Length: 404
Image 1 (tube, rainbow, N blue to C red):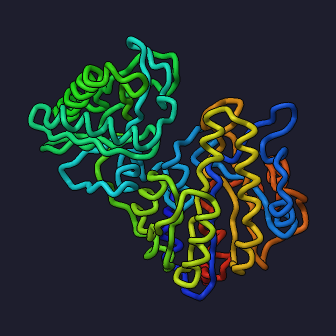
Image 2 (image 1 turned 45 degrees about the horizontal axis):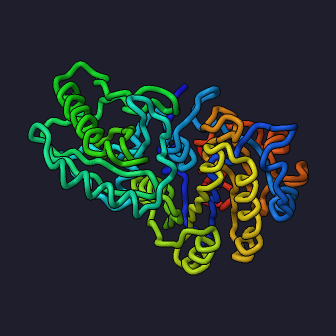
């Protein structure tokens, strides 16, 4: 049986003055190294204390065994079926850095990379300073303005990330990623994923851009190529605030997550770069919104880098702000991740994600701390991330009884 959760919730959701916080430690889930995960190694007295007062479980972002990207993983947490709404990473990155995207535009997320010959040796070009990224983007824009009648422009993001926008008639997003996804593999070019002429033409334009890029940047020591993925045009999504009848704020530091929040209809709040800055922003706007999406990025970044110890450190930094968040007296606080990013694997994975829900209606008392194994035995069990929003709304007393 298939059904649209959002359509069901729209029928029974109500408004009240409750406050809900969704704290997402990106990629927090892990697998043990020497019998312990970063969550297990971290000194987290506040999260562990909260676990004793909460319900715990673990989520499946998409389907069992499927490794999700950050886009579908977050969409699921926000209550959007990631199998129904397929959104390219490009649109998220573009909106996150305030790139305007119209009906004739195609956007993709780019990584500046280091290549030797035709081999990608570093997909992130050593994580350069954002200023270095901007310098290289200026060079590209001065050399490439148009390809086969299609306007081209690149926009710098953070560190190694950039956005490329193609503007023209009959462009298609039915393209494969031009990214080998791992270091040590050859450069790959995009291919059309449908048989229509627009997809074939668009692939030719994109590949010509990449070949030009390689020539233009050949003398750069590190930022000497670009990898593209998530080709996308502007999608049409149900509005988060209208579906759930909330006023929603997003507090995030990285463009993609700002873009995703903006795409679903949340209000993206300017904030600083540290977890403490994000906390200060939450405190400043707390009286103005009902629902708060609070994103912590570096747990994922260090997982992808294979840096177990730094992932532990970011978890501990997040733990340190839990008392201040609780001092705001939220009616519901969820602490979770969007997906797992095991440091051992240096990548996203299919492993279930730790999930903790705090409210006065929680069936508390079973679990003693917040980690993968305690969550696995929690009262919420193993469930799909797409059910998180209905749980949050229910604990906030925002759902009426369904049916007679």
